[in-house]
Image (tube, rainbow, N blue to C red; front, side, top):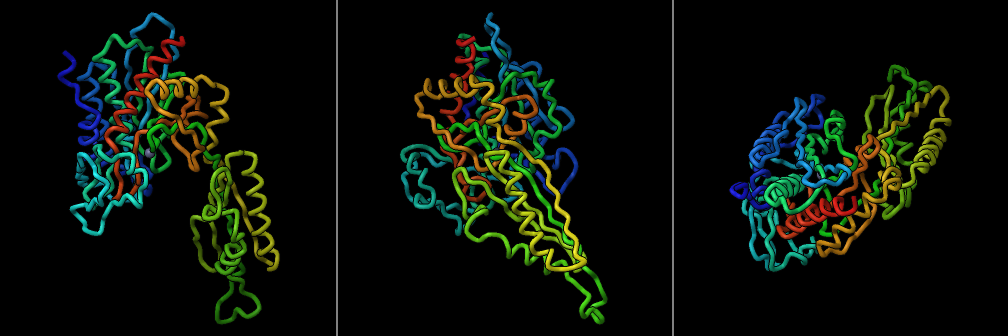
Length: 415
Ligand SMILES: [Zn+2]
């Protein structure tokens, strides 16, 4: 009976990406754009139609729901999580998804902008899609695979489990969040309401990738207070804060210590914003490393570089402040090895080879892990995200659904 709602993951994806859910980093309201709720409302409606009776959206735009347990065993409660918003970097208005069946490896010219061409030579991972179906946008917008692929995969899992009671599983919680792209996705999440022991975000890329390690992250701010005087009578007095800030930037190492010169497990310090007037100027930095203790070392080194400039000028003052942003989720996840082990077993049961590389960034899972919901990241297939070249392979999404079904089973079998 429930099969009348058995849309495929692709149908769902094509439907969801057409709803504009771009978040807005300049708006302090929550969610940062009301339109994110348009998708959240639709998801609640579809979940209710599937028989997920407690599906609901709260005032902040979070969607909560429960796929009820159908086993007598006492299985840990797991949660699948994805974000509804799309990146502010690229338009998400009037997304026109295009399904390219039987992709043959040739250049894909996007119809709404002749300059937008997706080439195999630029995206080698396209090689894995030859003979299969892929989805792109039309040239003027991003596609929104980040993270509507994750949303569609979780929705399809829910539908699958509702339609297949013979697949035994514990209680599975569903969580859709707003504002991941503005870094605020976990700000107002109610983890008591989620009520899960462990979680998995569906927000990763290539087929088979599994991510349980992220950067640890701080922000740092250097503020320089110069010495001000009327420029007409400033000789020998004025010390311009803007120029000192420029010297500090010029004093940063050229061949290391930066995102453009590091990879793999190396950390970095990265200036992201300069602001100021002659009297006072500041530089915002982000500081990243996989080893949390290294952050303090990077910050100390940055401070020494700034001080060595400022100390050459008498009367100039330096302020240096650091704020914690997020921490490497591995610090939490290593205390619960079954979370990764069960995922890896599920990948294998779905016939996949697991690739596990540390993420040179953060996910909502990094924050959730430290908030009490240990939460690694599973692939959806999304590629070239945050851009007009964004694309995704249909079979990768389908495989991700299969992994989630296997994962639900593995947790039940191991209980
Ligand atoms: Zn994402």
